[in-house]
Each structure stands twice: as structure tokens, then as C-alpha cells.
Amino acid sequence: MITGFLTFLFFFAIVGSILYGRKLIKTEKVDAVFGNPERSKGGIHWVIVGSSFLLLVWLYYSWDIAKSFFPKSANELCQVGKVNESLLSLKYLFPINERQLKSTSVIETETENLDNTIFYIKKSDKVNSQNKEKLINFVTKTKSTIPLLTNEKLLNNETKEQIRIVTEKINNLAKDFASIDYPNESPEEKTKRIEASIEEGTWSASSTSVENTIEIPSIPKTKRGLKFQTAAVELNLISDQFFELRNHNQQYKTVLENLKKEIKDFRSGLSPSDEISSSFAKDILKIARRIEYASIFPPKTLKDMQASIVNFDEVQKKEQGGLRWVDILLFPSGTIISSGPSCSEQGSGRWLPKPSDTVNKFALMLNPNVGFKQIPLIWYEMMDVSKIIGFLLPDWIADILPGEYPIHNEKGEIKPNFKSKVLNFVTGDFELFKIPIPTGHIWDSFLRVFLGLVAGIIVGVPLGLFMGLNRFAKGFFDPLIELYRPVPPLAWAPLVISVLGIDNLGKVFLLFMVSLSIMIISARAGASGTQLSKIHAAHSLGASKWQILRHVIFPNSLPEILTGIRVATGMCWGTLVAAEFLAGTTGVGFVENVAKKYFQYEVIWITIFIMGMLGLIFDITIRKIIDKTIPWRGKG
Image (cartoon, rainbow, N blue to C red; front, side):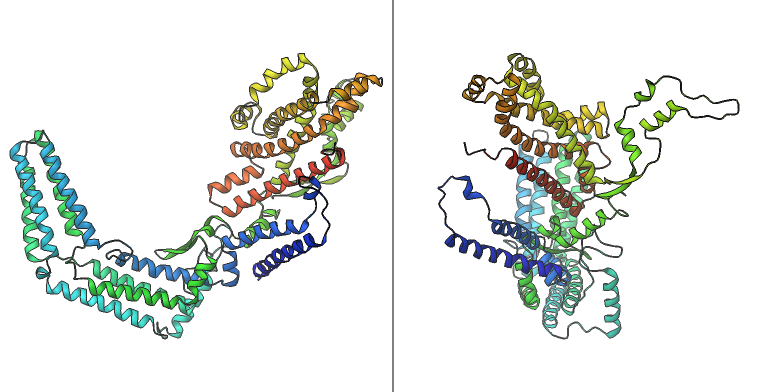
């Protein structure tokens, strides 16, 4: 219901925003020339169009629209898939889905194999002439068995009768299938089927479903589904009956038995040095056996059977009715397929999770009682302020105080003194009051990126400005920076994590390395790109070096620095996920890595969405800072 409402909402949002945008273009006065950045500002309605279009495409290609408007369509298509699977083996015999008869294809292939065998026998210098003659004779006799199978006059009456019975069964099934009353299900059977289908569950994602729920329900839930499932069962029986047939007349059996005996006697009489001859004889025998077990019939024998299969296929397609249009229109890039008794999604709906399933999974992962690996995505925990104080204050404050720490007395008692109380304070070993502190996978990843980025800015910006203003600094630090900057962060990750551990320190330091080089290059480019006329003007006004740096060079470098921060943010997010992939027990990258191992597509898409949203929040924040700090950019 909610998905259906959202589908209409997104559709009307797109149409309404486009109409509003066209109306606005006609009414507003546009006096800005082409290329003016002012022309690109505003237009929230186009944001709505883009966002709604993206969500509508997701709903459509994930098959969530089909699930919302036709919730039983997957179950019915499952039964249709069973019929198509049953028909496939029979269709394979005829030029329906294939280009030629199966018999023709087998004869063509095996004749080519026999001709190649003759060629290799004649070419072989390790087979004597006597054995060559015998082997070629075996090939000729094997070839001669094929006409014994394709001759209409040699076909047994019993085989003809069995083919006629199979053809009649298919025709009768097609006739019954088109009947409204097919199949005739008793009330007791219907009750049992409904109870079993309820216990089996509904169309849902297997990785987010509860117990007793599978991806695609295979027990028919509708009258149409029951019709197709019953027909599939009958088709399987008919198919099994047909493939038990063998077109082996008495003349063929005699020739084949003589051939097998001759080859056996030939191989038993060979010496160990005639291994190649034995191998050729074995290959000929394999071809003869493949011909024996293949369904080879005279060319016109199965003509009526082919017509009955084509007729049934047309009937079953007609009986699908509107389900065919649902399949064509609402199941793009795939459909529901059957494999034995079970069914599954095949296409974009398989790897593109449905928004409804994804939202349900996201809600479970946000739940602090469920989470992911017992850790929620984002939550809070109450932490005593004393722990924060203990983290901020160094322990050596207590060590530099005069006096000694308390020693136990003869009774085993320890009386605290001023120095021990100061130590308890600086280590946070006391109780004050508690405040909520964020926790969870998202918070851990956010904090790692934030700390690595801030550290890179704090170190990189001053060093970059120094390198842009001082030839010694540029010459000394430039080789060091350019040595590690081109190396991909993934190449550094194993070394950094091995040295600093898999905890936060290793990951934050890796992100610091990523952001540092970007910030140094950005700040250096900004400092070295300052217009000389501005510096001369500041000198002429009596400005000191610090004032020139503060009021001329640094403001001129801000656009480059802030752009570098935006670039570094994206690089840090990409590197963080790779680092958490390699080593980590928390974080968005860790969640995606575990989900990948268990094919939890909903979780993978959730992590992609989270990383995109966090990166977008970072980027929007930096853009707001750019607008506030350098509003003159692009207007000089």
C-alpha cells in the first residue's frame, strides 16, 4: 500500500515539477548572459524531478511496484516457470527454440566426430596398418548404425504406439488446461493448500524475512497458479515417459552388439605398446554409445508430437492472460524462474533490493536490540563525564606533584592522599554525571573520517603554505610528499594497519595520509598563485609579513584549500571503506564486507546509501562554509 502511494506521489511530483519549471521559465525575467553562475542557482523543483525520477526507477527495476500492485504475481509466475521448465526438455527435441531437430543435431555432431576419428587414425604414425584398417572398419560400422535409427520402415510398432500415446496425452492436457474447471480440486485439498501457502509466507527478500518465509512462494496461492502447477506435474510425467523410449529395432541392436563385441575383442588382443590403438577404439565405442542413448528418430516420426507441444505452448500462454502483461511491463530485465520445486528472481529484481525490504532491514539495523552483529547502525550510550576528563587530561599531572602515592598499612588498608585523588581525577576514575554519547557503525566511520580529515587539514595547510612561500621548504618536503602521494591508499593500508593495529589509530592515520597530501598541494597552489600586485600593494601600505600572510596570501589560498577539503573528504570515505574491509569490527565498510560474504544485497545497498548520504552531508557543509567565507569567489 505504501509503495503504491509513493509510486503515484513520485510520478505526480515529476510531472508537476516539470510543468512548474516550464511555467517559471516563461514568467521570470532572465537577464543573465550564458555562462553566468547566477543562472544555475535555485530550481528546487528540478531537484524534486531528479530525486523522484531516481526513486521511481528504483521502485520499477527492483520490482517493488509489481510487488505492491500485484503481490501474488510472483507466485503465479513461479507456476508458469514450472510449466516452461517442464516444456523445455520436450521443446529441445524440435526446431522450436532450436534451429534444427535434436536428432539432426546429434547425427551431425557424431558424424563429424567419426570423420575426425578417421582423419586422426590415418594420420597417426603410432598405429600399424593392420590396426588402422580394423579401427576404420569400426568407424564405418558405427556410421552404419545411424540409418538403422532414421529409417521409418524399421521403426517398431510398439515405439510408434508409445509416441502416439505421448502425443495424445499432450493434446488432452492442452484441452483440459483450457477448461475453466481444470484442475478439479476437492475442498479438503484446497484447505490444505491454503494452509501450506500461509505457512510458507509471502513474496519477500530471503535475507530480511522472518522464519518460515522464503523468497518466492512455490505453493500456488491462486486458481491460476494451481492450474499451471498441476499442468507442470503432468508434463513432467509425460516427459519422463517419452525419454524412457529408445528407437532400438532388432536390426540396430544386432549390429550394435556385434560392434561392441568386436571392439572389446580388439582391445583385449592388443599389446601394451598398442596403447594409441586401444584409445582410438575406446573413443569409437563412446561415440557408438552416445548414439545409442540419444533420442534419434526418423525425421517425420515426431511431427504430430511437435504440433501438440506447439499447441500446448500457445494454450498455456493464452491462459496466462493479464499475467503476461504484468511480466512484460512490471518485471523489466528478467522474470521469475523455476528450478525444480523452488523459484527465484532472475534479473534486476535479484540484485537490486526492493525499497520496502531495504527500509525494513534498515529499521532492524537501527534497532539497538538487533543492529548488525549486535551493534546498531547509529545509537547512543550514557557515558560518565569523568571518562571524557580522563581522556583529555594527561596522567603525568599527578606524577609531577610532590609526595608519594599511598602505601597500604599493616592491616592491608590503603588511605588515599591528595596525590592519589589527583591521579583518580586525571584518569577519570571517579563518578560525576552521565551524558549521551553517539555510538554505532555509522558514528565510528564518521568519527574516523572526521579525525583523519581534521588532522590532515591542521598539518597540511600550514605546511602547504610554507612550501608555497619558501624555496627550502618546497625543496625539502616536495620529494617526500610526491613519493607517497601517487601510491594508492590500499597499498599503504596493509602496512599501516600491521604497524598501528586494527583499532581506530591505524585507520585514522591512513586517512590522515590521504588528506595530508591533498591539503598540502591545495594550500601550496593557493599560496604560490597569489597575485604579486596584491602583495606589493600590502608592502606599500606598511604591512608586516604576518599581516601579508593573514590578510593577503591566506584569503587568496582559501578557494584552493576549501576545494582541497572537498576532494579530500571523498578520498577519505573511499579509503575508509577499504580499510574497514581489510581490518575492522565496526564501521560501514565492515558491515558491507560481512554482507558481501552472505549475499545480503539489502545490507550492501544500505551501506552504499549511508556512505553517499554521509559524503553528501560533508560536501554540503563544506559548500556552506565556502559560501560564507569566500562569497567573492568567481566575482573578481
